[in-house]
Length: 86
Image (cartoon, rainbow, N blue to C red; front, side, top):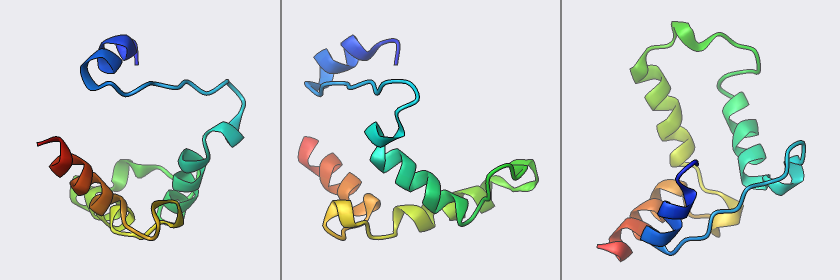
């Protein structure tokens, strides 16, 4: 995020950087890592997966409802956000 100031000026969205070694500041990231580990355990070599297989995993995660999103899916929230900016 070397251009975070440009991003903030263009989008009016503030960028927050978490402190190193502070996973409690990155709750959504940590939760997503846990969900991803259900498909790809830590240390697993993913070089044997095709782009299609990795995209299928990403799609499953994007279509999984999240409590932090009031049980909407990340895909729904993204679509809603994109629609509101257009």
